[in-house]
Image (cartoon, rainbow, N blue to C red; front, side, top):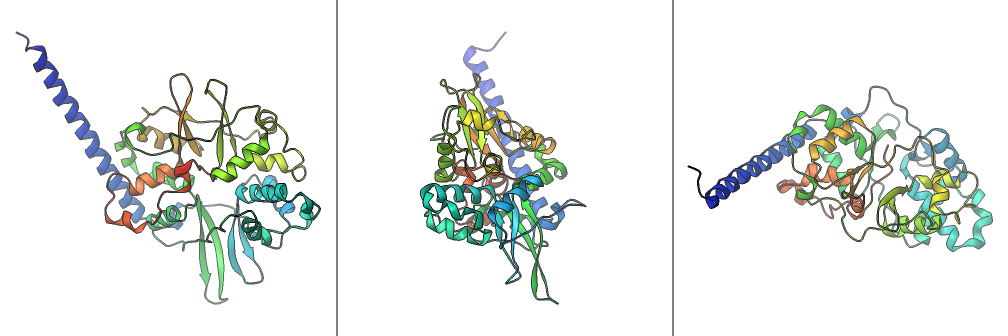
Length: 358
């Protein structure tokens, strides 16, 4: 004899709750194990056995620096001040966007662009009303966990590893860690990522409202203004129905301006994307039902910088960035007292900044 319908429902509810409790427990245990893993490794451990590092002197012309980045297939580089023998910050696509903004606002100074050096980038930031970013770094043998916390606190997407040579009393730029490299290292070496079975909708990460968007017909200069004003590094490109068509990234600006400063800023987004590098990895999408363990496995296998959340019809629902994921791994699900050490721990990513990480 079958139990009454109400009893069957009650049994199902208990089973469902039990399953949820198991997933919650596994999630917390998985995060605990990942944090222990990060605390047991140094920033140096993340580096590959063999790698190449390109460092640019601050006396270099901005125009030449752009050509060097493009020729070497990279999107950022540490800066070195040879006068002081010190690390002088990181050059990224955001710096070129700032230069575009500056000359767009001051067209009478365009004739000086060919004489503009990397040393003047901080002056450009101030001139267009931006607060110059703090030049942060970490020692290579610092705990990887601490390096990640420092990156999150700085709202950065990468952190340089700086050593100090006592004999010559000078700094040494060893390498630069990116969010992607750290997450890939975790995904490859920490099996507990398989325990992260909660779907995105239950994690409260990413941006799901007030997203800056554009269409294929939007002038590319307008998108560049959006990148700068919103403090983001990608803009979803939608059709008239809100269906995701593509994205425009801050690194796309490098390809656009490589032929000369800013002759093509009146192109539409669609026209500008035709000039995109063939090495573009594509747009990675997911739904809010996708689980974090699946996403970590995707990071292990593929190079990606963000996930665009869409619904069943392909319409934009949100963006989850590598910064969002890294911050969750360190500080999510009641991370404990250590989370209080982060002031302003919401990374730039959490306002739709996803980075041009390598």
